[in-house]
Length: 133
Image (cartoon, rainbow, N blue to C red):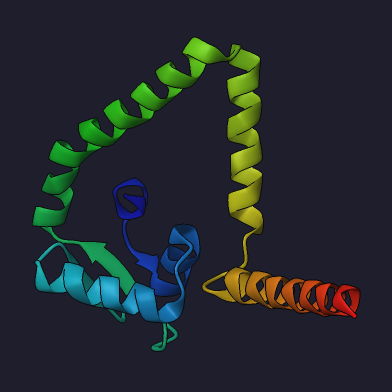
């Protein structure tokens, strides 16, 4: 979808916008390239930069998927609007954009959270064991 909005993005920019780690982004690009939807080109002055371009088949796909995505987003907004005011829905979307923008790339968030959970569980275990004696 990002390429429908701006074709020829570098792999790094595309990866960041999709919030994918490098391995996942490469795997996804491999799959899309095999399906004939994108092509990779090194036409930047810096030959290390890989840009991703839609093929004609990739552009055509937007004609089918674009309306489906818009319908899904509209349905979600309609459902939220049935239960919340317009300003509440706008605030919710704003908060979501902030959260999305602040999440660390890849698995960093889950590694940090699981370490915190492990520490908390260890403390709880020690506390409960001390209460038994």
